[in-house]
Amino acid sequence: MTPAGMTCPKCGTEMNHQADKLVHPTTRDEAASMTAALDGVIEEVFACPSCGRIESRRATAE
Amino acid sequence: MSEHAAELMRSEIEKRPGVLTELIDVGKLAIPVDDAGEAVKDPELSELMNRADGLVIVAPEYNHGYPGLLKHVLDTNLQEYIHKAVGIVGVSAGVFGGARVIQNLIPVLRELGLVTIFWDVNFTTVQSRFDEAGRLTDESFLPRIEKFLDELFWMAETLRHGRSHLPIGGPG
Image 1 (cartoon, each protein chain N blue to C red):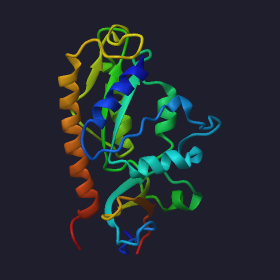
Image 2 (cartoon, rainbow over the protein chains, first blue to last red):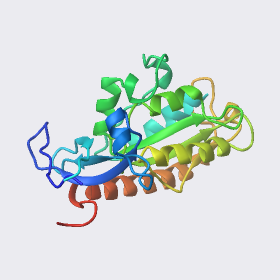
Image 3 (spheres, rainbow over the protein chains, first blue to last red):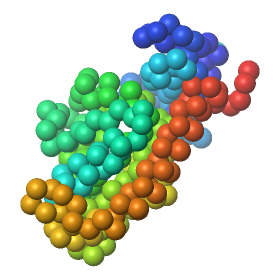
Image 4 (cartoon, one colour):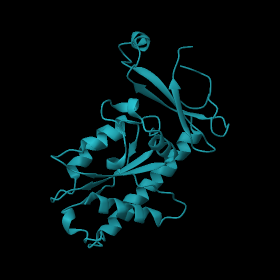
């Protein structure tokens, strides 16, 4: 999974990677990258310790 | 009648110090119905959900389930909900007080990433619980609401700390 962090777009604080959510693929490429065991793709969810903002992004393989 | 219950919940929440509350009427949101999910995300609702530490869902029960409009609106967000606290207030004209709508909502909320508390509020025979002005006519509901909010606030604060400071999978 993606090792890099995320900076809060609202206040610039380094965000905390607080969750990995299994979601359905939205593109053919994502669907093709799925494994039978995972049966979905990972959405990485981050929270800002300063302002509480939530952001997310698709995880990418290293 | 659910509106009276929602207003009561808001007024009880606002009695607690340091809390900002927004009452969202899903019936007044201009969300398209020709698609679903995040494809019809409402930016203002998304921002409200992003700022929220917890949700109270006041849901009437129809045919043992939740209103389709409530599900449609809930589905428009995802990342905004994850690891946030939610409590459910069931409302019904009968004696079960929305118990079945609560049970049916729980798996939906779990999949959205919300964390349900174990206290509920059940407004049984809601037509007899409020007067025409929306005032609660049976104060025996207040201690239960207090318990519900005690747990919701504990969960919201705990999860806020976790979201902000505890990385998934542990440090490093």
